[in-house]
Length: 406
Image (cartoon, rainbow, N blue to C red):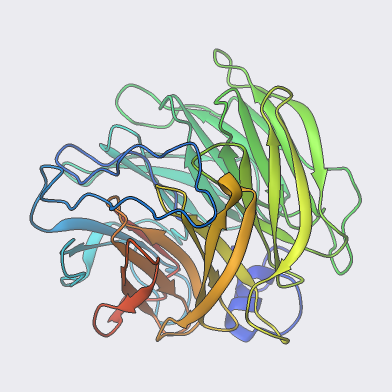
């Protein structure tokens, strides 16, 4: 979430607009629709010194031609868009076509797609938070539902396609909605506010920033920047209700923002917004609990940075971190079956304030949504080294805060 308008829930946009005081998301992806390029199944993990396997090309996987790229924005911000943007990209070259409109949605700052590829879900990051479903085949809006909280900044779809998970930044709560057979959103089944522990240094309350499914689909995890905590919940598969099973604390004032699991499932990587660090987290699948490791550098040096989120390659060999203050992407080698991140370098994005990053389904392209410059950058990804190279100049997209390639 970010904010440029007044109100108690507006800090995230204020930081994005002014980068003033600490502290304040990936668009979420499901499986690509029919005909979309698919990644090869990931191995259990990547060992130090191991050469990653080449990733399949779209042509090799049976897909060719332009692919869709969905774009989130702030409609209420100066120079903002009209709703969810729609462009196309060439999976071979990274060339992006003109940006049009998928659907008019208020402040759709984060996007996710259903595993069947038929429906897109967008948050409305406003004080009266909501989720909207859009059918992709004909761009029909299937309706909206309230999240039960303020300033929803992230949404994800449970792997079974039956539940929608959302995080309300301003109210520090997470919500569950059922997904109907049509793809429409049903009435909310649960909402939980993070009342404990007490807010971290510089925070006035809880700030849920992400709600995502763990390696075991019975467990979902909520990352809360305000309480310096990652909460684990058991999701009832029939009722859609939540039962807390554990809490993992970061160091005070870290401001955890976004968690991304290694494909091996035993480790995850946490971006800490407030103190400009990252952490490798160990996952205990038997108990559904996370253990946060020691803070590590982002490679951006001293000063304000606000790291945003990780993306990990499908083969588990490399991880990428978006750095908003440094305007760069940090490249890490993933070693010891996911247990270690080795910092390699930082690469300029050619834009300002990369809020979000995402890999294309075939892993050969990386997209960053650069909020302040209203651009999206596209990088070619070298399969052997994980190296990044800009695929042309960044293209214009109004107040780009999310880029979701399918």
